[in-house]
Structures are given as structure tokens and as C-alpha cells.
Image (cartoon, rainbow, N blue to C red; front, side):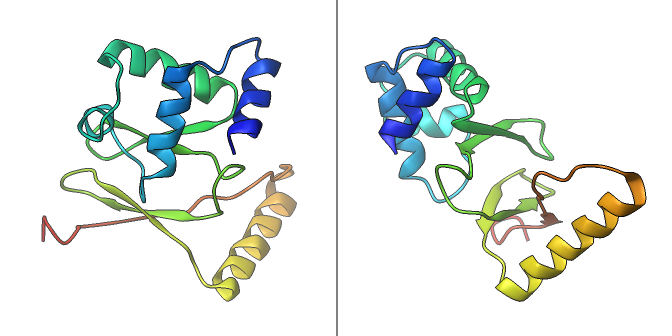
Length: 140
């Protein structure tokens, strides 16, 4: 995985610094998209401003995906190129986002729906995302 991130950064004329590598390691170890404060709690050895800057660079090169939640707090995860294809469940109260992997039959149905949308609107569909919004166990 680190080799892929290094290549992505090099294409963007950026270096894979120790801080960025540690940040990728922290994101690998998470099971859901995380906020900057959560990264700091998990041991990020950078200032908050450095985390924002490094996450922005990793997002620009295609290694990190930034998600906006119902609480307007950004959450970060590795892109699907570096992880697995998944979708999200979002808490409408606290903004927490969790990953969910759907059964193959539902993925096929989503792919068919994407094809129909493409045909109706003339888009070229590159991928699909699904967010289910509800209330998490802590908030309900």
C-alpha cells in the first residue's frame, strides 16, 4: 500500500514524508472514516495544522477521500483504490460515519441503477457511492 501512495504522491510532485506515512498507517488501522481530533487521539505525531495540510495533499494525489457528514465535520479515509469497495451509514445526530460492505446482489442492483442513470442522462459513470442516514447506537 505504501508503494502505491508513494507513486501517487510522486505523480503530484510531492514526497512521501514520515508524517504522511504515519498518517496513512493510522488510516489503515481505522475501521471507519475519522476526524482530525480522532487522528490526534489515535497517536498522530503532527500538529493539527500539519494534519490538515498532509490530508489535503493526500486527497489531491488520490490516496485519501474526504467525507462531509451531517455535522459539517470532515472525516477522512483511504480511497477505494487502497482499501475495499464499501458504502457508508451516517448518523444524523452526531455525524459519525461507519463503513458497510453490501452483499453482491445489492452491488449488482446498484450497478444496474447506475447504468440506467447513465442512459437517462448521458453521463459516463465512473463509480457509485451509497450513504444510508439514520441514528447510530450511541445516539438512539
